[in-house]
Length: 379
Image (tube, rainbow, N blue to C red; front, side, top):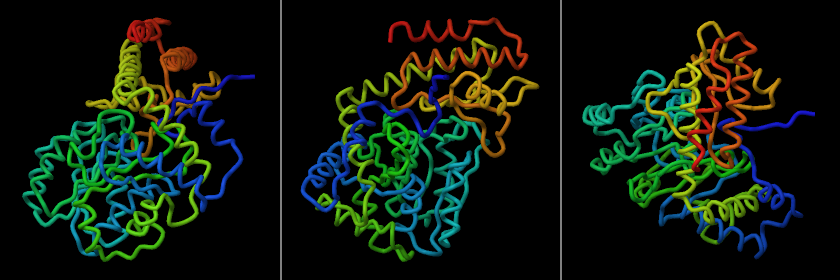
């Protein structure tokens, strides 16, 4: 029998308290008990997102909320600026194209730092752009993007929305929607919210709701106006993922009990320990501005990154993630968000050391674990 550890960037590990809550007998969604749960969830989602406005809840993957952030705000023929630099940033462009929105792409090399001035210059050249779409974390590269700086630029353009994919950012690091003037902030259940996949979220500003009034793209399932009307009655437009919302209630209680600042500090320490352990093993962190959510590590020369990821899982029980698209085989990833703690990191680095040894990489055995313990000793 092999014990399993989940340190992928999604889905992430689920606390026992949340699992037990979801295992309770299912309730009907059109009754007062469910409405009480939704009311609590609404309040705590506002706390998590840092917004006074409603955070919409959808039964879908996070991509559903991303799609809705296009279809509920824009019209065919509109322009939108899309910051790419990774697999998930490219998704914004693909969604825009699918609905007849002209995507103006900003393409920093994968893993590089985004210069906010590039966004500003692109806006100056395209003042009629209706939205800027970008990531908080580009999960495929482990890079963190300068959301606050870009949002401060977009604020100066009253006819342009600031839209952020915070799927691997909300609940990971500071990302206050209202304070930073983020018009739409998207999240998903399977990351820092410590739930199975199946729920998507969108915090929507007053400015965005004004844009919504003029959107001409057809919409049915992801109709945000109807969803808002129902949410304000503590209901959903369609049948919700009831057990996930019950689990969400518990997960949000746990986040609030720990306190967001403490959550951010914990995750930051875990990610720092992971990065420094990798460097102690002679490895290189891929992203120039690493996100606390997930550390992308460059595979040693001559060793396939997919082989590292697969061996850690198959032989040592630690599930991380491999590289995607152009990075497949070149990197592997270890996530430190959600329910992760210092013992998970130490276990993951131990498994990494055993795996690298098995694959013939030469290094001082124990160096990574020692560095991780040093980083974590006071946490």
